[in-house]
Image (cartoon, rainbow, N blue to C red; front, side, top):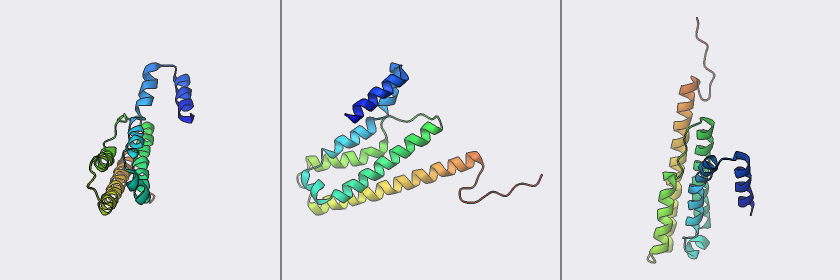
Length: 148
């Protein structure tokens, strides 16, 4: 219900169908992630809740950070983020393959957490480097003034 009223509020504030559809299209990746959770077998969710939660948290964190940085830089943000594809494929695999063992699902979810940690850190590093280069600043220190 809260999501419905949020979408309605956005529609009322923009008053343009094309702008509204553009705004709603940015929710495709989060919606696909939420839908992929329901593909997981109950045994995986019960036995590996921590891995599933950490992995989803990392993915949501990454796409949220990208959405914020891109909107601040007035850059285009892709409706479907490719970072969600490995997790979605893993969920589909777990749903379709009944031969995946408990240990196997724990292993692959752990690998997925490591992968998404790497993706988040490398994207943050790249974004920080580009911002610092563009603004001609250092990240953690103050640049000395050039003598004229």
